[in-house]
Amino acid sequence: MVASFSANPKDRALPSNDPSALYTGGAFLPDPSETENNRRAVQMLGIGSEGMLTLALLYLRPTSRGSIKLQNNDPLKIVLADEGFLSNPKDMEAVKNIYKIYVKNIAAELAAIDPSYQLVSPTLDVSLAPLI
Image (cartoon, rainbow, N blue to C red; front, side, top):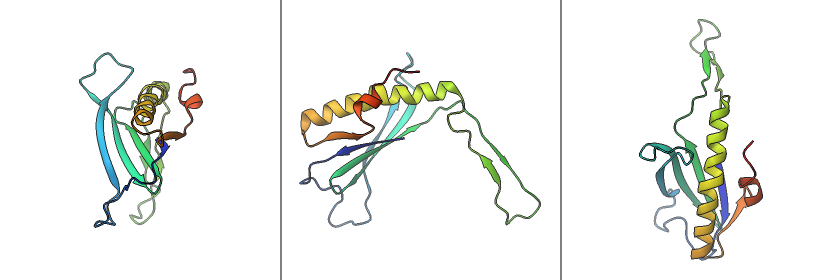
């Protein structure tokens, strides 16, 4: 999951002396839909580039399960993988809550600091859509 923001063009995402640098910061956050707020459930990574800030949001406590199967005895053959991403409806609800709560609040805080930072994708109307 990602959320992309426009950024102030004067801000430099990468240190000029380290062209290999990519991440601008990160955090571990609790699941916004649970009352137990002392367990990490979301990892957030900031990724900066020219004129953009992208937040990668990783849900760390999914209940969905996938599978990996061998095709045959040849160790060089690619395995058959079904990641099972978001196959459990509870995981989809958690992802929606992450956008609905965290992305909305981050967008408001960034815009208050510098109006150049605006949520580009997903748009707030999508982020705030009612949970299905």
